[in-house]
Every structure is written in C-alpha cells, then in structure tokens.
Image (cartoon, rainbow, N blue to C red; front, side, top):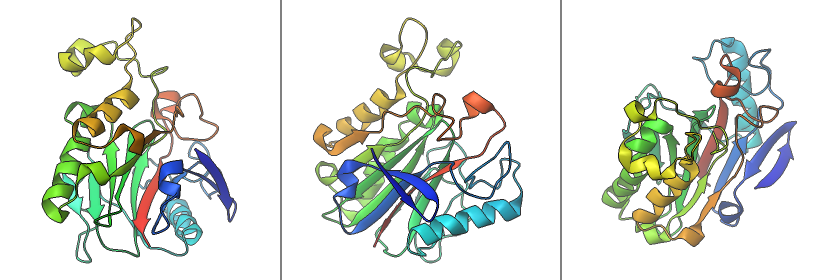
Length: 249
C-alpha cells in the first residue's frame, strides 16, 4: 500500500489502482478529523453515536482532500443490493455496493473491520465500491457486483483492477460459532483456531468471476491489529467508521 498525506489527513492507495490516471481513490485512516473519543479522528458515520457536526466536518475534509469532489454514500445494511449511482439516486438508498460510469463523484464505503473492495474497469470506465463483511462474503456480494457491472455496462471481468482494503485479517477473524454462521463451503478458509481468511475468500471470489489474479491487490492490513490507523468494531466496540472511496475524474 502507498501511504499519502494531504491537508493533515493520511490515506492509503493500492499500487495497481494508483497507476490509473483517470480515477482517484483512497483508504482514509482515522488520523486527523474532528471527532472526539471514542470516535477520535476521521469518523464518517452518522450512525455510530458520534456528534453529527463532527461527522459533517470529517466528510468535508475528505472531500477537500479529493479536490472538492462530492462524496456519495448509501445506507449500508449488510445485504447484497448493488446501487447504480446516477444524478437522481437517493442518498438514503439501502445498498452495500455502488457502481457508476459518471465522473466527478467519489463512491464511499464506511467500514470498521468489514472489507471495502474497490474495482475499476479502464475499458468501460466504470468504478465500483463494495462493502463486504462476513455476511456479504458468504453471499458473494463481490461476484454479484461484477455481474451487475457486466449487465449494466458491458464490463468484462478480465479488464477489472481490484483492491481489497484494510479489514479484519486472518489473524483476528475468529468465529467460535462458525458452524451456525458460515456455510461449510467456506470452512476450507478456517485455521485450527477458528480464524477465517476473508481476504482469501474475496480474492477467490474475484478470480472465480474472471478477474485476473495479477489485477488484485490485498492491503494486508488488519484493522483490529492497527487501531492506531483504523477503526475496529472487534477491537474497540464503540468506535467510528473509516472511509474507503473511489471515483472517476
């Protein structure tokens, strides 16, 4: 991951996506921002318990960092709905993935252990941002998003460039009730201590849809291990959400 600083904010970029001049993207850390403990830093969620004023200021700071680009959010519900973002898309729309071919806006996913999976098709000029927690993973929201990109825009997965963001790593993704929560098909991703490798699951879901493995970059940063950089629900319980975003210039 490439670490960058701008306007007192720190964010990471995927090396493969950073090579694409016609998009902008970033995984923002919790550093900077206006929120106070326990949301201290750059919390972008209105539903975590933070002061609305601080959240609005934090979102404004991120927009400024992205060249005053408008930020687009949806109401994340741990489902599998994919929203195609247009000018008339309602901001309160429940969805856990966004796709668009419209420039001049950044699609933002809010996370604190769940994955944000950023995707870009440079041939069709389409971007996607996917919220993939464990529920999204077992229902393959990544695969569904790629299929919607193909249906809506004619995207070919072999052209897609993807990044799997900082999230709960295999070191910390313990599921003691996995027999009840996670289908048996995913048990091959479990170690003897009942920790699951959701990074590998997401990578395999991308590849199974046709995305070349060489086009995928995994951050390798565990949110729970790095609460100095990221919010983590497992690590902190009462905490904020950090922003992962991508947009066409």
